[in-house]
Length: 369
Image 1 (tube, rainbow, N blue to C red):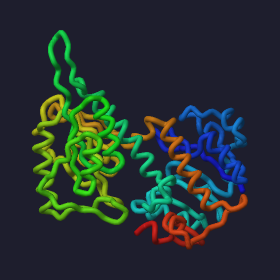
Image 2 (image 1 turned 90 degrees about the vertical axis):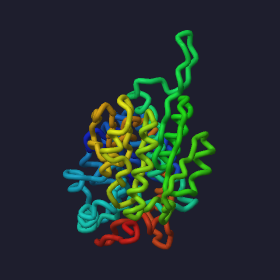
Image 3 (image 1 turned 30 degrees about the vertical axis):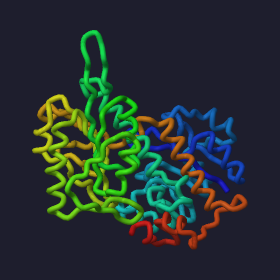
């Protein structure tokens, strides 16, 4: 069986789906790996490194013509989509909840498509959980971005010029990204507090040395541990309480997402106006519209003296480790599909069934639920 590693074409995308180390592991499973010319270059993995690992570097035309499985980070578009052929398998972050048109097109083309952002939250799927691996990158980088844009030190410093108090950082959302942001901000020396509508995460927040804010808002947790949208009155109360704490913070990192829906607005325009000049908001939900009303996706702006960072693809700013982690997710997932060097799809397996979004000329429904 041949696995193809396609070059990413999305603007600003620097990650690659499979790194050279993973090529060696796939070879042990009886898989031949084709890598598109310069696919790994933006992530510092050159063609020579892939060839040394046992891959064959090919043109885009040859890759899409020969590969049984095409692996990507971002979903295919334009010319990439046109190159996919009937009977071919595709593994990528396809965003099935927000792009039904893509699923219909993949089904029309007879492609068997697996979405790495639809991996079920079950124990044995943890090595395949691409959302978690990429959220780890985002959470870490968010703390660095906050420190970079804040005109203050994060740690407390005692100097001959006097004692400088530590920065106060508020993290909204305590999923994987939020917890990593907490841990990184704490390592940088900040005083950190955090809030999440799911009270079950309190222990995790406190284990990292942060204070969990017990606001007067009912907890909400859905299937797989994801947050769900609050009722309108609860959401308004949430915004009011968050605004109070944001006004006392030097930096706010927002990470709240609801699968398949626009990001909930946690910081209103009024909340931004209530923050001190020089404060920073890093909005990791910018790609889904943002948790802050003033966020402009893809931009860093200053509103009323508050810097708001709205990067939409934070993992791509750290392509080496982001690619390594995603590549391991892909390799773990492929191990479910490959038997004796051949592609075998067991739809009795909840991971295979839950991740497949198109097969046999039709859109599959479970990954879109």
